[in-house]
Image (tube, rainbow, N blue to C red; front, side, top):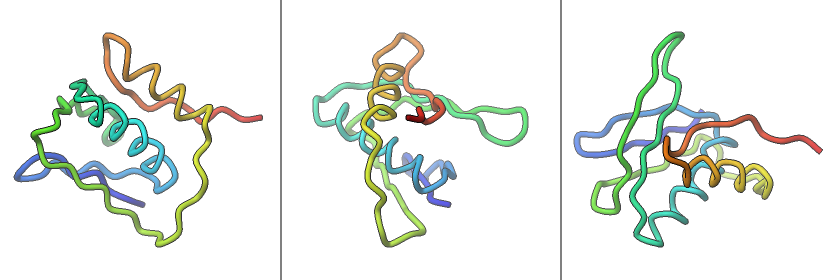
Length: 97
């Protein structure tokens, strides 16, 4: 289980390492282009957290595993589609096949 830490003091959002590596690819691609966007994820059983992702705000990705699994390009593209939408980035299921 990895963690995305955003802001100072940081908001900690736990994610599976595999999902976090895909979120990292999308978030860093958008920040490289100086794009700001919203990110909403489920927290707890019934809650959710929304953050405004901006290049000036500290961001840390912490992974439990030292090895990185290869990225699923189709999943990165689906996540990027949500990030480019009006509601901002949200977690979607990994496509199979």
